[in-house]
Amino acid sequence: MARIRFIDNCWGVFNQSIQDYHQLNDIDAPIQNPYSKNDLQHLLYLKNWIDTVQWHLEDLIRNPKIDPREGMKFKHRIDASNQERTDLVEFIDVYFLNWYQNTKPLIRAKINTESPAWAVDRLSILALKIYHMEEQVQRKDTSVTHKNQCRQKLHLLQIQQEDLSTAIEELFEDIQTGRKYMKVYKQIKMYNDETLNPILYKKK
Image 1 (cartoon, helix red, strand yellow):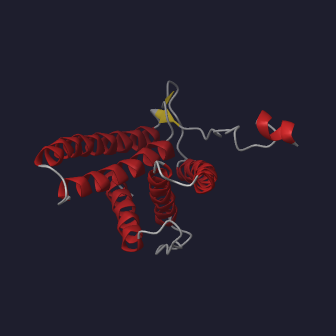
Image 2 (cartoon, helix red, strand yellow; image 1 turned 60 degrees about the vertical axis):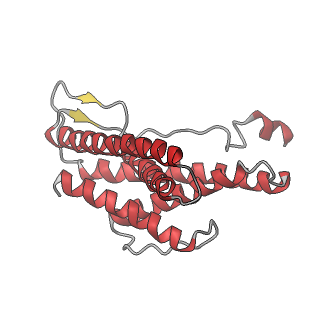
């Protein structure tokens, strides 16, 4: 698969997920993943759906009038979502690692500062930023100044999307040609682990 086709496909899947979510606009709406579980697109769609739900949870929890008990429920959901997101990114990296298992790194091959899946994770978040900044530009209940400020921010986000897409393409090309190699690192989040978070294991 050509790298530019992968990036275009990736961006399309992310935006499809965002559009599908906003048809319902409900954090409890069940996901209707349109892709086969054997396809990479299935993982990409699921990845962005998790990000999209979490985006709106993050909005809700910042309501200054939120009931503290409701806010704590949202906080626990966000923690669980972060863990699910992390696990899925690592799983996608394993997919990429298997994809390039027959590629032999060059003698002086270098490792990248982030893995392919974590770069793709950033692209998923960027798709959400662009979608919601476009919403701000289109708002009817705000000032011209607000719209202009959001339009400038949207332009910067679009430049970031172009640059990140290019960087991901180049990373895949470097791995394919052996100039770089990849590893899968576990994030080892300690706050969710009952054996590592002192607040949790001391309570037990």
